[in-house]
Length: 254
Image (cartoon, rainbow, N blue to C red; front, side, top):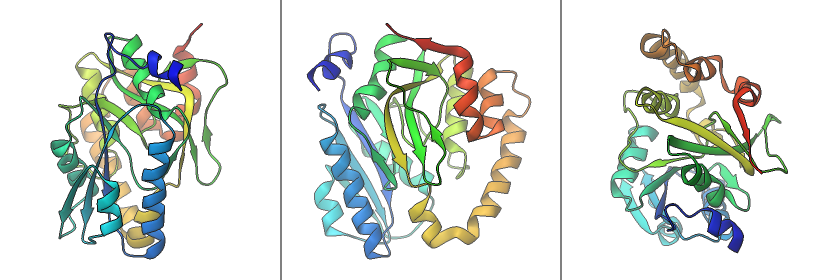
């Protein structure tokens, strides 16, 4: 891990990082999944980071004990509003957007930081993902960074916030606002995370999903449908495309 830690330094220093996670727990299995997600994050990196949890409705002592910063929101709003609330509470220079259905693998934080150390125009970084159900957007044994994004777990500098008018697709909208400012999104395929793909959301709110996805498609067309930037087309075409399109502009490191 020591070598990874050296590679993660930016301007000679290891930057401060805050991982933000909204949580809603209505069943015991959700509690165990959340505990596992946080504990696995802790033991799979050599770098220090802050965990910021915003828990909605439920108020779980075990989760509060695992967090460095904990906020209880008694009434449910949206996950995006909870993310922004957690970002506001975070003290890190870099924010990691994550969730309690994401199980990271060794070197995840080092991998997220590396594009920022290498590329001055890096606005956001992601890593390889294996989705529940089998889709693998994936890890390589070589040191490979490509331009692209897939946002179950994503790093960006503090100062950026999600647009609260979105629920689905807020990560893609954030990326596009970065591209308009001349920044880019990079994926470091040296590390991977497993994404259980809305496991906790679908357990409670599956009936809302179709309606919100349709609203997302409409909103995306209104805001970014005519955008000429390459990344807009990648996001618009959906997650499956990311595993192929990003190879077109891959950067292979020695």
